[in-house]
Image (cartoon, rainbow, N blue to C red; front, side, top):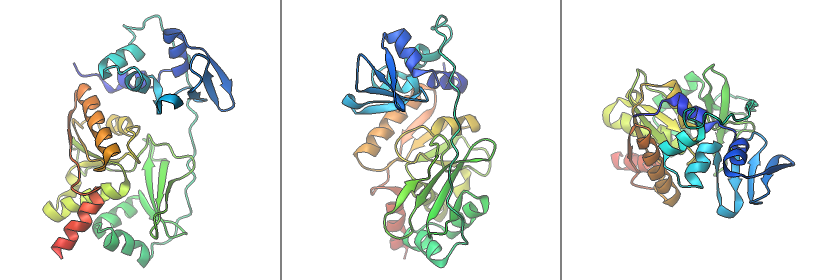
Length: 297
């Protein structure tokens, strides 16, 4: 039986400290901007009581669900039931967590320059029509320093995530206040059951450009950037697009990307989704796009 998104989100947002204190017997004390575990001093939970990192194990995550899966190697369905299913944990009432909404600080916008388009369309090979559409939608813009800025919005249309990619050199960073749960995405023009998932906005646009070059139908499927290999942006997108049933993980073709893609494919298959891994031929889909454009001449 497929787990519904609401149940999964309730489990994912269960208070980590309350759970570990009541169910694992751990105790915590606040030190600065984090809570430290007395029994395991290298285990730290941030002040939001959801984000955690176990330094000695070199593993971290967001919420109880990640903890049970990554630390206790619990299968996804069992982890959801253990973390937040009322029938299983009828006596467990985690302390309410008030989300502190971050305010993303966006760099000042500036009219796009020739260099901006040259970088995206010539150096990176991205289809100009795709670039123009994203600019029109407000999910991509040129800042006063000549960088490309990619935006992720919440359900009310407010910018909650932004990352910057330099058009000269290798500069890249997330903007201050960015929340990775709201990733840069390219939703389908009409509702689609398929979602392609990437590590970066450039790869997301590159895959769309490859599809457009081959079929001319790049808008028929959804695409989402995770801004890395963490899947924190995936639940929000799926909640906003309940029609999505098939997930295609297109992360980088390196060891971290391959491992993350395989793990996520298994995790979401257990949730009832059809999943598969579609790796690029080169390191990433932008490398594949550049090679394709060179062959095409």
